[in-house]
Image (cartoon, rainbow, N blue to C red; front, side, top):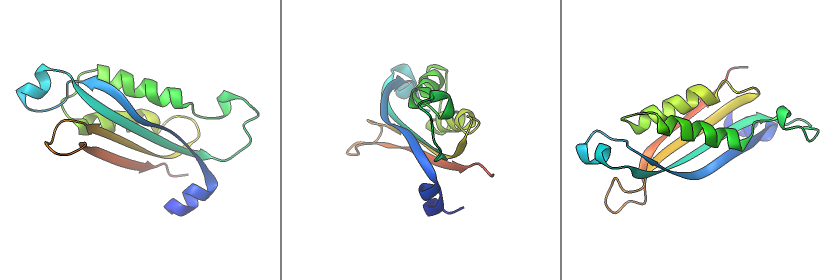
Length: 124
């Protein structure tokens, strides 16, 4: 399935730039003090009538809860945060595809942010 086909047949549910504090990095100064990170996550689910029932969709609050819980656990790398989030998000009921982006806001001087982004597609 192409990205365009996915966009036409699915609904995107997302959180954008969830601000969290985390101890991520390989350098002592990165691990010693918590630093601000931004997490964005999107899932694509089939467009279908919801009937006003939250059980028929994925809650964006669930995406935020997953991010908060994973960041609270200890990880050294931004890549690990992204991998762990994808591992949990991709098995949520109805998820066809997704994207997770984790960025540090102060890691590179002069840059607004630097980070890791990963996409996944669940085979149907």
